[in-house]
Length: 394
Image (cartoon, rainbow, N blue to C red):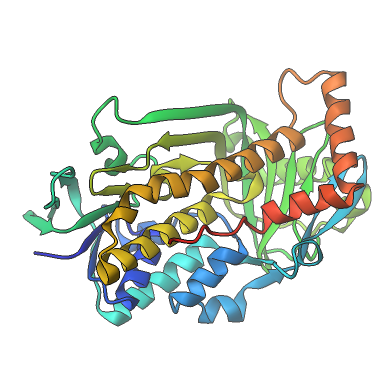
C-alpha cells in the first residue's frame, strides 16, 4: 500500500491533519492502535483557541461546533474572595475562545473522514515506522492477524506521549525538558448548569479550583489534590464541599451539585522534546510536548503543530519547497515554549505548592492583584489565553 503521508494516531491532531491534507489533495492514511469507541471515550480539554477554531473551519468540520459550541468573550480569576473578569475580546481586538469538548472535535473529524472515504486503520497492533532517514520511509502494523506495510513520503507521529513515534527515534537524538508538579487535578463531569457564564480560575489557600463547562447543561469542575490522592477516596459529596470551600462565598452559594458522570485525577507536568523531527518523521501534539492544563494549551498546541506541518507539506507538494521541512521543528518550538511559559506561569500563580509559606502566598496574591489591576497585565493574560498567532510559512 502506498500513500503520501502516513499518520500514526487518530486523536484530534492526527485526524485534523488528515482532513486538511485530504482537502488539499494530499493522500494520507491514518493508523490507530485503539478502537474508535476507545478514542471517543477519552475525556479531555474543552477550551479552543481562536486559531484552532479557524483551522477547524478551514478543514470543513466546524458546522456542529459553530452550532453547539459556546463562544466565550472572557474568563474570571477568583482570589481573596473576589472575582475579576478578563475581557478577552476587548483586550485582543476581537479574539475569543470556544467551549467545545475534545471528544466532540474528534467525533466531528471521524465522521468527516468516513464521509470522504479517506483510509483509516483502527485496532492496529505493533505499529512501527521504518527507514525514517531515507527517501522511502514506511510503516508496518498488524490487524486481524495480517501484516500491513504502508510506503510513504513522510510520517506524522500523532500518537501521544506513550506512543511509538517518539520512541522510534534513536537514543541521544532528542533532548528532553521536563517538570513534574507535586499535585494533580481531580475532575468531575456532571449534568448540572454552570455556576457562571464563563470559566472561573480560583486561587485559594486550600488549593486551586476551576469551574468549567461543556454545554449549558453539563459542567466540568476541578480541585487541586496531592499527587498521592486516589479518586476512590473522593465521594461526590466530599468533592462538592471541597469545591465550594475554594470559591468566593457568593459563587459557592449559587453552585448546583449533582451526581458525577465521570471522575478522574490528572497529574500535572511540563514536557518538551527537541527537535520535533527525525528524518522524515514529524512529531505532533503530546508526542512532543505536554503542558499543565491550567492555561488550556494542550489540544491547542497540537492544532498549531498541525497547522505548521500542513502548510509546509502543501508547499512541498505544490511548489517543491522541500527546504521548509527542516524548519518544522524550529517553527513549532518557538510557539510551544511560549505556551509552556504561560501554562507554567498560570500553574505557579494559582496553585498551592507544598513548600509555600506565608511570604510565597502573599506573592501569589500580590501578583494576581497587580496583573488584574493593570491594563497591560490584563492584556498579557488575554493575548496568551486566546492563543498567540500562528507563524507564517514562507
